[in-house]
Image (cartoon, rainbow, N blue to C red; front, side, top):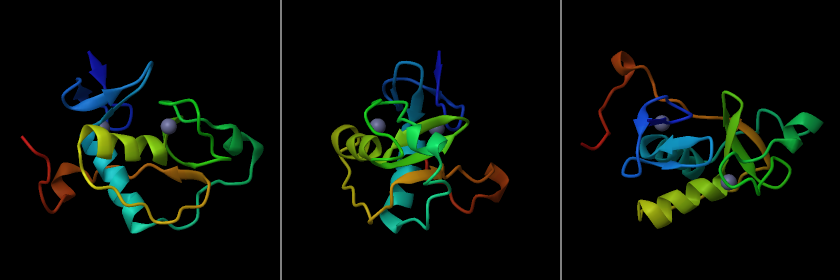
Length: 122
Ligand SMILES: [Zn+2]
Ligand SMILES: [Zn+2]
């Protein structure tokens, strides 16, 4: 069974995107996309060597030096991968505000008892 690397929920091909050793649920990619659309404050880390060498765990193409990455538990997903998932897989419009290259904290879901609304489908 595969799990989302960001929220730990089980995911399959219908509910998420699976990489080699990683996975992301559609709920998580949508949350990240929402954050991208809103724009982000400065990256948490943008200038250290370690940060700029961090690569997207899905495409292995983008690094924090060339893109904006979301990080959770040492894994990363780049804005390009999030955009691709939204547009190509979920067929949703995707708009990105201008983002500085670097590493951003992944926008995790609020704990269930604190969330104000249920937005999950199904
Ligand atoms: Zn998830
Ligand atoms: Zn990527």
